[in-house]
Image (cartoon, rainbow, N blue to C red; front, side, top):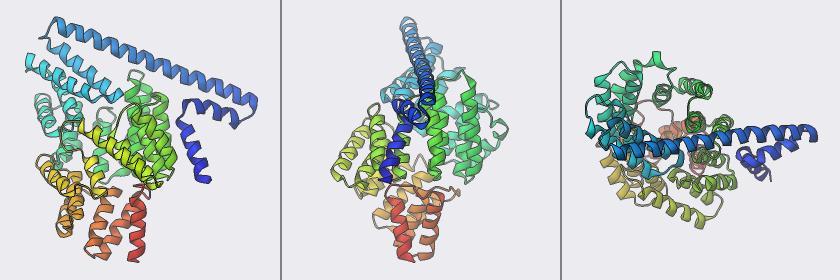
Length: 445
């Protein structure tokens, strides 16, 4: 009964209709009416602002489409059009818009190869959105070589150094950006580097400040403001701070109501609390807009945890359909999903090994190590896992994988150490595996 009550309350937090209704019941009738009216006015203002932004963005898109049609060789117009496609893709989750952004950016660079930073930035962003990090890195290298003093180019390079596993390069790049940490183009990337190297508290401070600054700017699209809150909530959720994560996601939804990314994260948060009905309801609202693989994975886990294996399989099939629509490199979320269920293990292991040829980051090594463990090759998995842990990243999933590999090798001390670390970082790191970690620790004791 208590879980059901909390689930209903949780859903109401992000339901526009329920915000006003809950306010009306929270205080006296008169105060409730006033609060309800204020909430409705505030939400109506946000909705109107978002509608104006959407209309303006679509008008801009049509304007530059017409300009490009009139002048097919206009490099600046094509670069601007590429950026508009990318922004629409972020707002709607329409993957085809990332491909359109790539095409327009390449056309811009074909029209003017030199002194065309906007075209190159647009191309790098489109490639990153498709997880084609090695190709994007080449664009970032060119931008940095042309203007090494610009913080936005250096932070872009640093992000791609992280993604491709060039951690020595990333350390130098981000070390040079510490004085630019207030820059909104730098702060999220620098925070990710700090988190990756085990400095979670510093990353948290940076992201909270960035979200605060984004709110106060007034010139950012609502989608971008929401994204900064998303980053805060994502960090807090990964570190088991569930109430703080909820506050961040709700703040993001105030800026950009019904944002599918935030609803997907709220579904993950509900699953972390064991509120399976809430996870499915929130996830359903998210995938009604965008068939996002990560959200479908959460919904499949939630259905499985609540005992509905048939529904869990439906979500798994939908996830595969969504993944197959995307081009680019190996979809790691899908690969981990398959390994967790013991499916296509040899295929995933081969794909993970191939992926590491161009993207030698810690999560690539983690994926390969988990695949090797699922193959029963635990001695090799431990060697691979050492590469995944080499930066000191405090990630509960990494620790869980390391602990289960150590347990399979009967290394009791290491298994206890890693599994305890996983639960210390985040006692709710996975709807099913957190309990598995606790059961394994009890067995080891």
